[in-house]
Amino acid sequence: MSAPMEPETTPEEHRQRAFLLADLGRYDEAAEEIAAGLSSAPQEAKLLTTLATIHLAAEQPDQALAAADRAASATPPALGSLVVRAMALTDCRRFGDAARIAEAILRDHPTDPYAQRTGAALLSEARNGQEALNAAWNGVRVAPAEAEAHLVLAVVAARLRLFDLAQKAYAEALELDSTIGDAASEVGIVRFERRRWARALEDLAEEASLGVPPEVPETLETPETPEALERPKKVEKTEPAPVARPFRQVLDVSQESADAVRETVQYAAAGTLVVSVLTAAMTLVNAGISRVWAGMIGVLVFGAVVIWFSSRLPEPGGVVLRRLRSSNRRLAIAAYLSFVAPLFLLVYAGLGGVATLVTGMILAAVAEVLVVTSRK
Image 1 (cartoon, one colour):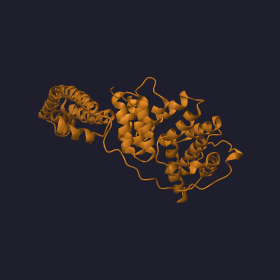
Image 2 (cartoon, one colour):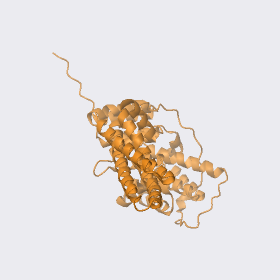
Image 3 (cartoon, one colour):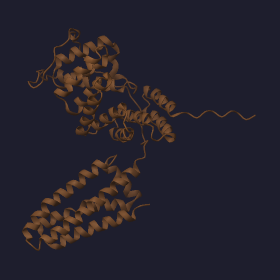
Image 4 (cartoon, one colour):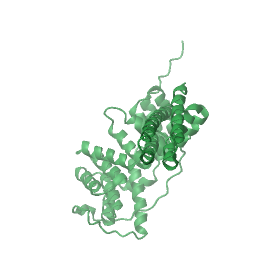
């Protein structure tokens, strides 16, 4: 008789293995475990969210954002997916986008204790202020017995230089759960959010010890402090344990990046051609006005190309261009031409001469042709 076939490992089993490996600081192996799960379930939101968390824990925000974007693409996105996406956006310094997600979490889940405290913490990371403080207090109000709610209040208060309130809130968090004191030194990802807030509080406590004045800003209103928050304790600085970071990118975003480059080149080339034609036509009316127009619109076109390019890419632009130079040289050349072509509008504005406009138009047209012929 033939030996019975072993059942295939399910995506959830891969995910649970990743949690265990992450607890040991082996983020590289945890990411590989998630990759194995994604091979059979490439759109599984829980796997993608876990992968994003692994990259966040490994301080790899670009990779985290790529995974979080995919995890949050489901309709409607899960709360956990939105949380890791906001964290990744913050770590990538896209604070406006992170703040909008935090506000949506707070708005859409007004009675959910987890959503309220996490939304408050995320909002304070991206754009701290009265709204974040109010949300943190609301998190304590809806779940007064949860230590993490008080921890978040401590973090938000410390970021607002309300150090007395922060100490009292942290003391209550310790009273409810003494393991909060060791949260910053943990390496796993099951309680990654708690670790993130605890490490943030350590950094803020260190800043306060250097002499930052703890005055309450006049524009902030602090509710009355409950009696339970009257036991201030010091936050001790801890060193994180050594970890093994993922050494390869689990998600292959090369095609997505290439599509973003093609889209950018097409928009840039078309915009440059249209503006150049209009500028050339204006020379028939008045050459001076034409050059002023070219200067203003040239700056706008070039700026729009740069902003569009950086916002559409799921990974750093330098990484994308280096890969294209070795794998798809035509598309790489088209990308560079799309940046250079609008600059000839500025050259025309400064020096004049229809030849400069024609050169820019030719470069834009060549970029369009290279995009079409670069498809494999």
